[in-house]
Length: 139
Ligand code: UDP
Ligand code: MG
Image 1 (cartoon, rainbow, N blue to C red):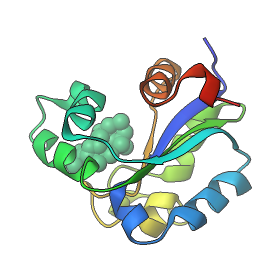
Image 2 (tube, helix red, strand yellow):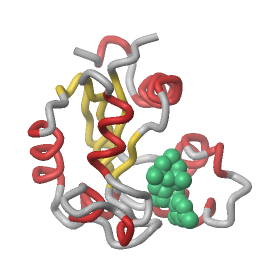
Image 3 (cartoon, protein in one colour):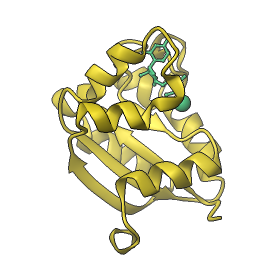
């Protein structure tokens, strides 16, 4: 398993609010290399599948609606210790609790509409990358 990669999405709120460029600049400045990237939109069915682990949680319906509500940027990122370092760069799930300067502290509005996704393990980074990209789209 590749362990120096993580998967991210710039979520519909941040795309709509014009933050793609600033977020990608912050990701590059933190030392991540972009391995794959696309602007795309999740269907409700694909969003439901992507977040299936949360299907028993009370916020699942809203999360699926939100994540399929508009375009996202999906990307695979590479850096030593990618998963952990990227979670630090994005900050806590709730932007009110995210450290100052983190992507969520800067660009997120709420616990639900929180600007970015970051994989939580090497295993999930691999699964989530394969969900969005085929091998020939990775560079
Ligand atoms: N989420 C939400 N309400 C909650 C917890 C999570 O709407 O109480 C949403 C939020 O968009 C979050 C996503 O569900 O990013 C996945 O939740 P998780 O706990 O995996 O947070 P993350 O790993 O994204 O920080
Ligand atoms: Mg998570």
